[in-house]
Amino acid sequence: MKETHSKIRTLIVDDEPPSRELIGTLLRDESDVEVVAECADGQEAVSAIRRLSPDLVFLDVQMPGLDGFGVLSGLEPSQLPLIVFVTAYDRHAVRAFDAHALDYILKPFEYERLREALRRARAQLNQRTTTDHSTRLLALLEELRNKARWNRIAIPETGRTIFLKPEEIDWVEAEGNYVRLHIARKSYLLRETMNGMAVRLGPEQFLRVSRSNLLNIDRVKEWQPLFHGDSILILQDGTRLTVSRVYRENLDRLLGGGELQSKG
Image 1 (tube, rainbow, N blue to C red):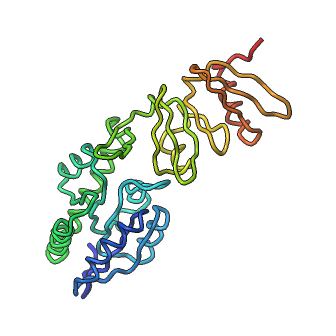
Image 2: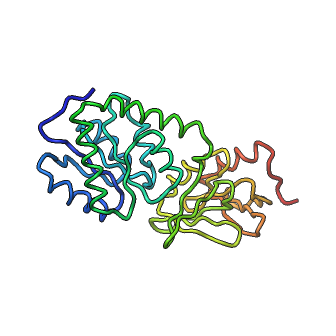
């Protein structure tokens, strides 16, 4: 159990600057709270938690690359602080938070809900019940690892959130600070890095063919070798994607399994 301090040492983790600013504005008005750092991504958060040992972390769930759950997985049980999850509406996540009695706030924020989350955190720290909180966090992580229903990708759109199964995706392309997910004749824009997307989708089902493209191997219809080690993969819908030499090893793994035939 972590020793309490005269002030609640708090860390804010969110990839969106306006969200960090809003939470920080509220917390800095509280005389018993000290904001020790703000982090814009998961890797930075893991390092900050290990280095600073905060009492409380407002942790964004959906971040490019290493998400909020990945942050928790990267910590030892003894390093887990009190967590208030921050998320755009995701009914599956909210249901799990409720089931494990873990606190969360939804975007867009309401000040009163932020204050309520802080009051609850303050009460837990004063009552020294953080050990029980860590147990509930570990139980949540175990549930995430074991239940396939969490294998969903949430796409925020105006007034709604769309949930996609990875196997529904045909291919993915990089688009600035976003990725575009192609599904049949539709496409969806998601704030995520290509590296982060490759980790989320997994190498068993999705093949990285270039810096900008990732594809579902079940959608591949044809392989055409080109000069200088490059190749073309043709998908079932006719999409043609170039496999660069840098990613040839990924293609060799696929071909080695006998899953593709070259055009004769």
